[in-house]
Length: 380
Ligand SMILES: [Mn+2]
Image (cartoon, rainbow, N blue to C red; front, side, top):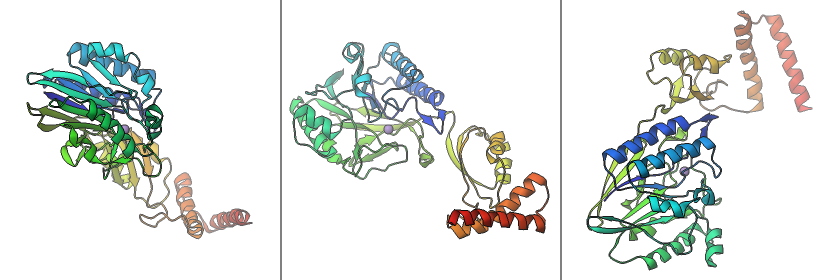
């Protein structure tokens, strides 16, 4: 049986005020093509389908189209669980009806986890979709004393294991933070205070664990306890990630061989560093000038209207850092005296850019006097 494992779609996400819907549609189109070309038997989406519990209309329309193309168009079943960004009840709408047409939505936690059974030529494979849940929900639903994610997961999986028909191959979908997992800046913590991590050992019962939550592709414990990673970079900290999906080929005995297939975004996310002059020059011949950029400007003097200058060559500059601004290299100091020393030279730069001339001694004296007056008032 060939499975396509993906997670963390975050459809409808905004990044620095820009909608990523078009970028998401492009990589989802690639996922549909992989499912078709590789003739996969099921598509597994391990949570964070949407970016918010109440997603924008465009995000719902995109997801509806993607599932229609996979389930009806290609006749490939889809199994998905909710993540910590999803609203479980809304995501579950119509799920009992949809299961009949091959769209299996595990949105809310059920009291008895029932497997979804898919068959290949060797027999049945049991899929267990565990929607994201917090300890309080498990405590209330089952009247059981659990206070950490570890205890909650352990309890739920013990029920799964009780219900499992021995001899059946099995796959679990779960949206969790595994102990020692590598994080990025785009995951929202599952809880405050560090009681959100769970041990990878819980999943060794299954032939494959399709995990979601961490946005970097990785595995823990064994190769088959695995995060596929998100479909796009959702923070500049993921600059060096290679986003894609994982193909899982499961044999008669449940042994899995894995393959990572890369997705190609329309616009990549990159960090560029240099002086303004240098970057403007580079931008002219940069084939990927529409990428989403964080720019770290190393110039040490004040420059007017940097963003619009940069956007003439790099239209999607989203964030600007100026580590060299205060003349302290990479460590901008916010010390008050330092700021005072720096602001006179900043003013000289500013004046020169506006008037085209150097500040003369009389003008400089007026500016210095004014600044002292301002700081005197601040300190009074
Ligand atoms: Mn996520």
